[in-house]
Amino acid sequence: MDTGDRTVNTTLDDDRGPSRDGSTGTGPILLADLTSPAFAAVAERLDLVLIPVGAHEQHGPALPVSTDTLTAQVLCGLTATFLRPRVAVAPAIPWGVSWHHLGLPGTISLREETLIAIVEDTIRSLHGYGIERLLIVNTHGGNNAALQLAVERCHRDHGVPIVASVYAYSLIANAAQELLGPEAIGHGGGDESSVILAIRPDLVGRTALGTREVNEPVRRVQSIVRAAGGVLPIVQHRTTDSGVNGDSSQATAEAGTAILGRAASQLRAIAEELMDIDIDPFRR
Ligand SMILES: [Zn+2]
Image 1 (tube, rainbow, N blue to C red):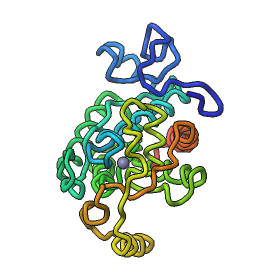
Image 2: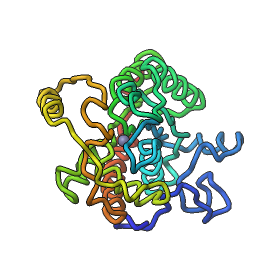
Image 3: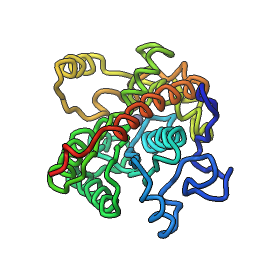
Image 4: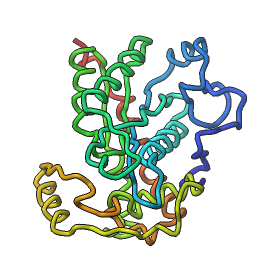
């Protein structure tokens, strides 16, 4: 796909070079593809590791349950491609905190404590090999509270100098709002649908795009509380019968490509700041 300033591979299945450790080739460095010695060599010169965190949850009748994980993976792949060979991508964490979606079939949800433990153990393992800076790229809002605790514990209790978590869905939504309008924003909406049309069109049930029945009174109160920085937990099937609360009728692959390009550019800027900041003041 063309993100505006260079052509990159969004499938994360790059075969344009014989090596995936950054010494040759052009795609993202994927830690999962490296041998142990290759990882050791890469770890010595890496400045940042990205950790995609998604969810396995219902996204209505048109999108796969892996929507958030696929989105997090492609955003990390694009960002690491831009910043090769300084940045690598860890394996995606494909589950999240999705209890509010369990009322609609297909969802697998972790307890908050489980997600915190997975993230802590992942980061502690990588830190043990000398990885000093990590960025979690999270695409599912239900993960945010757990991820905040996880990164705080990694820094405070485990001495990881730079470990951050960003809510990358907000980058997707902001870009989509400019391209598709405010009605497209929301779970399973035009924002997420455009992204999946761009990267995995084979997984989209096109005839079901545009399906949504939103409980407007509930949505309005949630918006009021969120605008004040708060949360109002309500199960998803009480806010929308179909599980979708954004309008996906105008979703296109072209919009998805543009959305991903903008979001990845913002992630690149954040990654560059994290790589360049002096970490000494953060040491104990
Ligand atoms: Zn989603």
